[in-house]
Length: 346
Image (tube, rainbow, N blue to C red; front, side, top):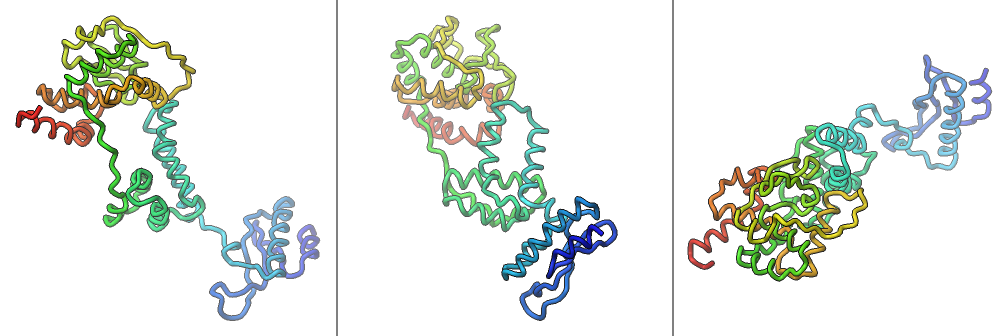
């Protein structure tokens, strides 16, 4: 009775029940655009209940309107298959995010990293379209060639594809582009000593001395354990967790008077990420015009370890990253300076 009452209000479309589900029946144009119109049934996804009939009636009215105003399109009335829904970009991204947090701690710093390195690029993917290599390529090409963003979008999309076992064509490699970060100036030990002697602020002189002597990341200064000084330790919630670090060279501890800790009066909000904390240190360096950055001191530490014969495996552990990263990031600096030393140029 309820179904009949709703159908009486319709002209070109009728609601039909098959089993426990409802369908719309109407004479529709051919899907390929050729041939005669034929009668078809369209799934509503609605159950044969009072509420389901009301929902199906709303869809029937919309279908009838599309037919009357000659705007019917099969794309609008072809529901995605379960496979399509499962494999669309939105679902692929959601599964990647789930995996990401299952394999790492979730805190303000890692959340900021996920947004910066992954989510900002995932947002460019068409969420409702199937997650395919063609869609990835089309999206990737929207980023300027040889740009910072093209490189990082490439890395994010490859990580997403790898998780879902989507074959990544070898010919995609050139799409990554040729962008590289500009080399920072790596100060020599003599430059560092001369520059630090010019810093008239005790707090910032202590910070520069610690960074130079221990090769820390700037944000790690806020999370140090000095209980075993001159051996220092970083806390667990730094970028790569807790580690112990020895001074290289050890005589810089006395030279820079690092046992007498001074600390600028930072007004922290308590919600800063590691990136925020590092930015405070980097920006604090600029007024002193030292000729190098805070990260330049970390680079100099890596080079110093190499020139003093510290094994790369040990140096990478002191700096809190893998040996592959250590070699990839620092080998060009080390090779250049080592060659210069061998040739007597420095």
